[in-house]
Length: 265
Image 1 (cartoon, rainbow, N blue to C red):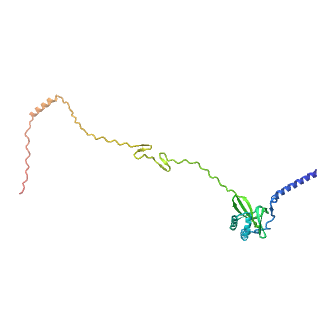
Image 2: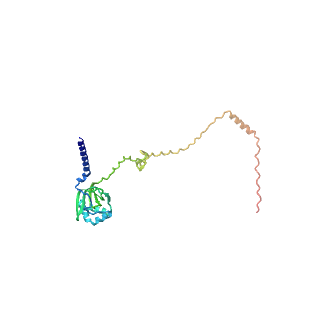
Image 3: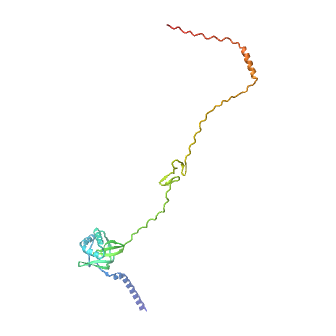
């Protein structure tokens, strides 16, 4: 029983170890080409700087363009790739282990592998060329200079939604008592020949003519006063007695004439 248990434990441990190894090496094993080392069939050769990469592309332009054509790049894409390398618009990156396609050279001829696994921790240069909905990520490992391709989905740029439309604002109105539309507001006026304030407009009434001047008539009023009858005899008595007993002398003589002084002849 003890030996059977020990055997079962060993079998279980072996199964776990095999499962781990399969998981660790399963992806490279499923690839068509697994390269244990780079540099055995170089396209551009080992390089140590971007300036050296630019020189190699210029020196081996024919082979480089043939490799680009084998990867399926168009002439315009190849020109864009060469222009970016010449201008230094490249990035120094860790090359991914799985490559969709990799070119290589042997005896002056260019070849290509599909579905390639390369060793880990390989560095090189990357140049991205957008093509429609995808991006052609082109890698050049520094150990060999083999032009390689990884096709990626092009990231979709975030486009913010358009701002929501603000609610319509009420149309401005003219102040009270005015008409029109701002800023052309004005006070209403009555038609020519009429007065008042709209809508209460009316034609002015003619002014009444002044009445003719009246002639002033002065009426003389005679006032008759009644006199007592008994005053009449007293008036007569005074008239007769007063006239006969008046002792009046002769009138005084006139004043003497004024003598004028003699005049010399």
